Amino acid sequence: MGYLKKQVTTHWVDATGKRVPKGTPKAKKEQTKSPKWYGVFNSKGKKLSFPLHRDKRVAEKMLKDLEAAQYKSDLGQISPFAKHLNRPISDHLEMYILFLEEKDRGERYLKDCKRLITTTLIHFKLLKTENNTWQSKITSCKTLLDLISIDVEDFDLYLARMKLSGRTKNTYRGAISSFLTWLVSKRRLETNPFLLVTKSDESRKTFVRRSESEPNITKLLQSAMDRPLAKFEERCMKRKTALGGKINNEAKKRLELKGYGRALVYKMAVLTGLRAAELHKLKVHFLETETDQPKIFAPKTITKNKKDEVFHLRKEFAEELASWVKQTGRKPTDPLFSVPRNYLRNFKKDLQFAGIPFLDSQGRKFDFHALRKTCNVLMGKAKISPALRQKHMRHSDIRLTLETYDDADAYDQTIIVSGLPEFRLNNSEDAKL
Image (cartoon, rainbow, N blue to C red):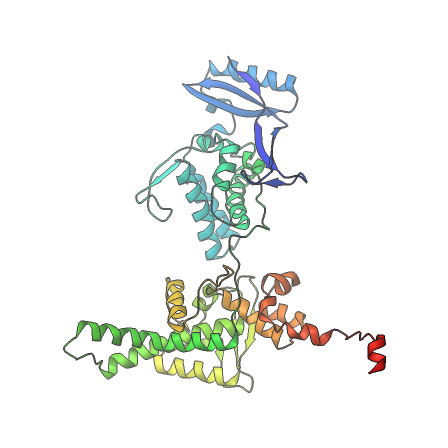
């Protein structure tokens, strides 16, 4: 015999009633019931649960109809969704990715979407791959029915245990929820149970980026240029090679060019605010150096905001870029830079070689993306208007420019003292003097 029940969702709230992660000090546990009644009954040895109706009487009738029809045929013949519920999740996911491609979503978006959903499915043992990673080949996959059988509280717990920022947790939540919302829109699923998953507090950040001073950026650029050759010479000396620790001119030129290219990537990032993924897609023909005002064009196909952008360059920097293109023999359709997949590892080594800490005393990171933050701070120090800074940084919200990507500690604090009035007081002793 089947029975009715309401899905119970557990979450924790603080003193103000705002939802917070489990384990937060002084947080209270609260439980909410779903507005719909769920029918629970057995079919072929499986315990099935389906959303029915908000009205209990209507839900009871629907449950009886389901139980009566169970004797005639399998669930697939009475539910318009069952033929989809019994298909592997991977089939639905493949169609979903194709749908996103038709919507002209970027390559990075599609890759991240697949990664987030597949990683979640692997965690809940709904999908298996050869190397147990999202990139490897799928070996087995459970059905959509198994996916919607996951308890919402278990998904909340999965997100709460992640050592990630609230924003990243919400990205995981949004990816799986958007997938199920698409299934509902395509009449493959009746409702999306993951809409009830608790939203994480995005104000809590696992780390904060910092900007760096102009002298330290200069040291970093020099470090990037010198490190490839210096490290190779160091290895040669340690191995006591037949060359006697020396290096031939051809290899030396190659290593110097490698360091020069890496320094140009960092310089482009700190002067334009371009991200690593955008720098990777820049082409030689995007660069215009034979004009009074050199510039580089970033088409909407490579920018994050999907808009065409133009960045003006200093003449000396444009000359360096032109020299780089000439020395490397790059063609107009070739990538302007060689940005490897392990660029962050190289960046950390360049920092170390320059004597710049990756983490400062306050626990703030200086990673590759922090070059973008440094770009904004340098413009602030140059007293460039917030509107121009926002345009250059391509921020949709001015708060990103003036809050997230700004760094008050990087500015000279003494200007506050000089900017405030003196308010001199004349007491009796001053009068005598």
